[in-house]
Length: 381
Ligand code: UD1
Ligand code: UDP
Image (cartoon, rainbow, N blue to C red; front, top):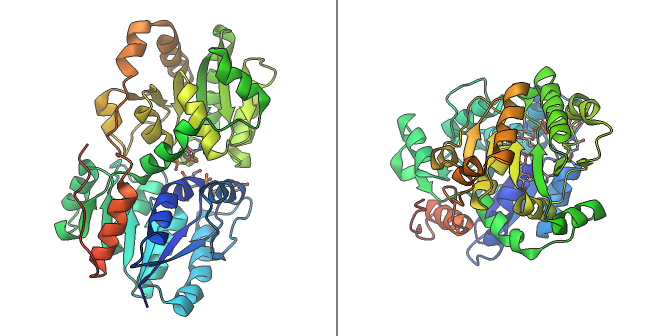
C-alpha cells in the first residue's frame, strides 16, 4: 500500500495553509492522505474546510470556551495518540506554531512517526512574543524530521539552531498558494454592506486583531484608536471582521459602538476576506497570515506588534511594525491616508513569501523523505 500521510490541524490559519498541501497529496498517485482536525477552532475551522472541499476523516472536537493552553495541549495529545496507534501513518504533517501543531508533533514523535513541519524556521527571537507561538515553533523544530521553510531567512534560522541542511527544504509559504487560488474569483460577500462598499470606490481600512499578548488593555487601545481614526476620517470605512474569541470581543467592541463608518462583521469566509484585502487601502493587523498575504496584493500593512518572525516584507517596505500604542496607531494610519507619497512608498506588490507552488514542493519533499521521489527546485524570493 502507498504511504499514508496524516495532516493534523486545528485553527483557521492552519486550515488555510494546509488546504493546498492536502489537495496536492490527494492528487498524488504515490501517496494516501488522511486529514485529521483537532477542532481547536470550531466555526472558523469548519468554514475553511468547507471552502476548500476538505472533509476531515477524524475530528477530536477539543474546543472549549475559556480553555487554557495546557488543556488544549492535553486534549490534542490524548485524542491523537490512540488514532496514531490505530492508523499508523508513515508521516504526520503539522503546520506553523499553534498549540495544536506542537502537541500533534509531540504525539507523532512519541509514536516514532516522522514529523513534517510546514512553515518551519520562523523566529521573532523573543520567546515571549508572540506567545506562545515562538516557543511552539522552536519546540516543533527540535522533533521534526523534515523542515519545510517558507523562505531562505527561515532556513538560516534553522541552520543556526543546528538543524541539518539535508533536512530543510525552502518551499515558499503555502498561504500564497491559497491566496492565488481565491483572490481573483470575485467571491460575493454575504453581507450586502460589504458588497456595496467593494463597488463604491471608498477608501477602506481593514482591521484584524487576536494576539494573546495584546489581550486586555492593549487590545482596548486598538479599539479606541480605530474609533478615533473613524471619527477623524469620515470618508474612510473601517472593516473589522472580529475574531470569535470572546476575550477579543470584550476588549474591542465597547470602544467602537455607534460609529456609522465602522463595519464590524463576523469572521469573513476566506474567499471573502481575500477579496476584502484586495479592495482595501490600508491593512491594520496583528495577524501572521495577513502579514504574508497583503504584501502580495500591494497593500500597505501596519502591524500592531513589537517584533515579527516575518521580516521579509518589512525589509521590502510594504509592512511596518508599529506596536499597540493608541497614539502611534492613529498617527501611522492617518499618515498613510493623508500623505500620498508615504502611501505609495509602501504600496508595493512584493512576493517574498511564495510563488503559489509551495504545496507541490512540499509533496515532493515528503516523497523524497519516504524514498519514493525527488525534491523540486527550491523557492527563491
Ligand atoms: C489560536 C492560536 C494562534 C493563532 C490563532 C489564529 C494557539 C495557542 N493559538 O489563537 O497561534 O494565531 O489561533 O486565529 O494555538 N473561538 C470560537 N470559535 C472559533 C474559534 C475560536 O468560539 O471558531 C473562541 C473559543 O472560545 C476559544 C477561543 O476563541 O476557546 C480562543 O481560541 P484559541 O484557539 O485558544 O486561541 P486563539 O486566540 O484563537
Ligand atoms: N482570515 C479570514 N477571515 C477573516 C480574517 C482572516 O479568512 O475574517 C484569514 C486570513 O486571510 C489569513 C488567516 O485568516 O489567511 C489569518 O488567520 P489569523 O489572523 O486568525 O491567524 P494568524 O495568521 O495570526 O495565526
